[in-house]
Length: 264
Ligand code: COA
Image (cartoon, rainbow, N blue to C red):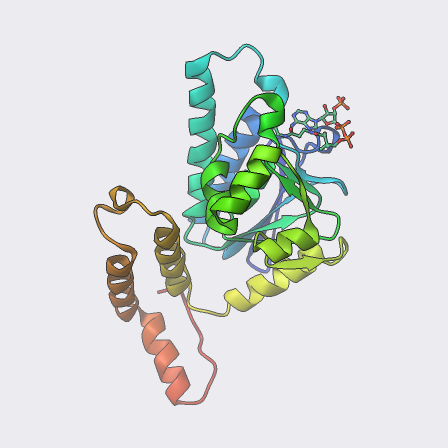
């Protein structure tokens, strides 16, 4: 189904593994084609309730965009490359089903940007994050200038991107770039455990949360047809009231039993 990804579906969780370990899982055109298809699959396959993105091998999540594809690009071609990367990462960010990054090593450049496009991140103790593009005479092109700033604040984002300094797992935790640090052995298990909790909740409500929280960090009303995040929240709150799951959830509370959500 994919040339550069491995994908498994277990207990409703689709685990997508970027599989170019000899190139530290660098993102080439084919990886973007495959990731694009994987996000479509996550959206359309009813058996998939949530997803994990991780990297193959013990060393890297993703060590960046594939630098060998940069050679000879002119300005327009470079802009098209950035736009393509941004579009695929927007699809991840706007997935209605949760997509969590399990960062198992280097997450540099496009790898850090991919992790940041996921809804949140866990990492193993050996993980290293960074936007080292200035070392190449570049800046991030797949959303890094925006998402790193949203996650860690302007001053730290400026410093990290201007110096190309890498941050280790514990600093990433302190900065709020990741939510949890685990051993390499327990990274996927811990990520799955969190997703299993999320999967006991009402799927439509989870999708609405993703939508509203994304609006909170996209500080531009032109992306939301002039609506603020508060407007969006009012609308999404109302949408939840139109679901069977809302009736089930409130009834289950009053009847002192566990809710059985169906996603309707
Ligand atoms: N694009 C293309 N190939 C890459 C790559 C990238 N972003 N990152 C690593 N690779 C390749 C290397 O060229 C090498 O290939 P080779 O065996 O055919 O020579 C292989 O992956 C292993 O990488 P190597 O550099 O030998 O491993 P290392 O342990 O010495 O260093 C890193 C690891 C992550 C520090 C180093 O690979 C690196 O700095 N990568 C680039 C990071 C970067 O600048 N990313 C932003 C890109 S915009």
